[in-house]
Image (cartoon, rainbow, N blue to C red):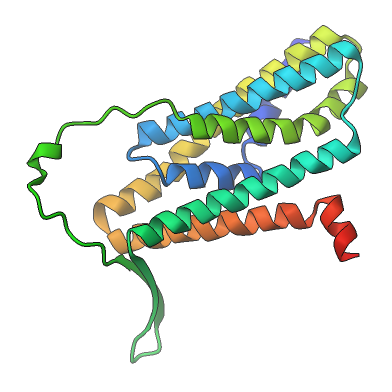
Length: 237
C-alpha cells in the first residue's frame, strides 16, 4: 500500500507537466511580480486541482459511481475554453500596455523578433509608490486549478476504480496524487518564473516577447484541447 501511495505522489508530480497545465500556470505567472508570488500561484492551482479531485473522485469512489463519457468530454471542452480565455487575457493586457511586436531584418540577413512598449511614462513622482502593496489570495489560480481537476477526475477515477478494491484507499490515493500535483506545480511555477522575472529586470523587449509567446502558446493549447473533444470532432466529421 505504501508503494502504491508513493507511486500516486510521483504521478501527481508528473501530472503537473502536461501541456494544458503548463500553459495555464505560465499564463497565470505573467500576472505575478516576483518568484514567491508565482510559486504561490502554482501551489494554489494545485490546491484547486486537488480539492475537486477529492470532492468528485471521493464521492464517486464511495458511491461506486463513474463519470459519463459525455460529461468528461464537456469538462475537457471547458478546459479548452478556459485556456483560450487565459491566453487572450495575456495578449489583451499587453495591448493595454501598448506593447508592439515587430520582426527586424538586418543587412546581413539576420532576422529577429522584437517586442517593446509605447506606454506613456508616469508623470507624477513615483516615490509615493515605493511601498509594497499587499497582494490578495490568488483566487483565479484556485478556480483554474479546480476546472482542471474536474476535467482530470474522469481519467483518474477510471484508473483508481480498476486498480484498487477499497474506496477509502482510493480516496487516499487521490489525496496523495493531489499533494504531488501541488508540489509539481509549485516547482514548475518557480522554473517558469526564472526567465520571466530575469528578462523583466534586464531586457524589457525579451520580457514582452516571452509574455507574448506565453499568451499565443496558451491560446494554441486551448484550441488544440477543444479540437480534440468528441463534440468538436463530430462537428468536423
